[in-house]
Image (tube, rainbow, N blue to C red; front, side, top):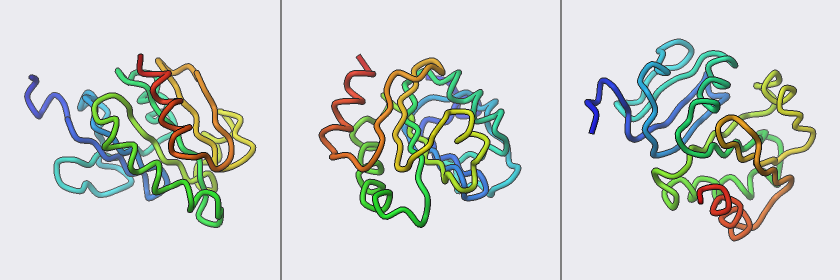
Length: 149
């Protein structure tokens, strides 16, 4: 296993409270920057630009589940706890990014997200699946399983 200075194993990414990435994955420490948010112990890391986010999803060794939400969105409040439980269930197999669509407009525009909640699954930076609207946990699990095999 690599030294902690080369990789973080447990990972939570925060971008000025707009982007939160929760996962257990091995991501090169070169993605770590202290701009825009404070670090929360050794399991936190911050990303300060849209380019850094794109670089992360394009270089992830595991599928990236991007969850677009907003504070005012009632269906988002229903599905958010479900998304959080998937982090533990698929530890080491996925990376989950939660993006506040009101504060990440360039990413939303780039990925053509027109409705929230939206869950997008990317492998090697390419979208493989998109689920729009509030979804049942089983449906999200099946979508993830289809993309980690």
